[in-house]
Length: 114
Image 1 (spheres, rainbow, N blue to C red):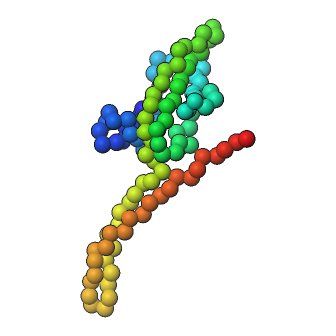
Image 2: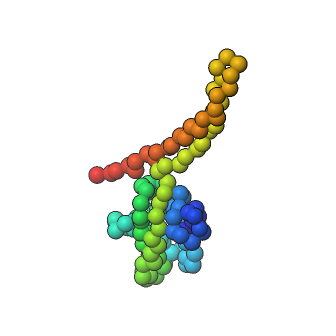
Image 3: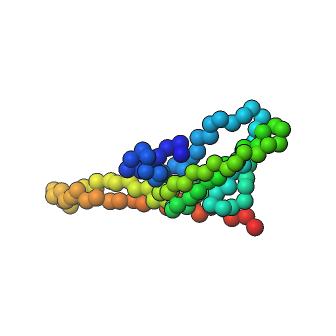
C-alpha cells in the first residue's frame, strides 16, 4: 500500500489505494486481480469503492515463469472526503456564527464494461 492514510500508518485503511510493487524483474509483466476479479495488466485504484479489498499480483518473467500470487488486503475509505468551512452570517450590524458547514464529496461509481 503506497499510502496508508488511516489512524495509524499500519492499520490498512487508505484514501488512496495505490500500490508500490518492488522486485520486478526486467522485462517481466505484472497481472493484477482485484477482489477475485479477472486478471488485468493494469490496476486503477480510482475505480475502488469504499470497503474491504484484496489485490493479488503475479509476475511473469521473460522465460514465461509465473510467480505465486502476492496479496494485499486493505480498506478503502475514499468515497467521502469532507471539507469543513466556518461561515459567519451578518444581519445588519450583528454577527451570527460561526456555523460549521460540512461538504461531502462522493466518488463517481466505477465504469462497468459488459
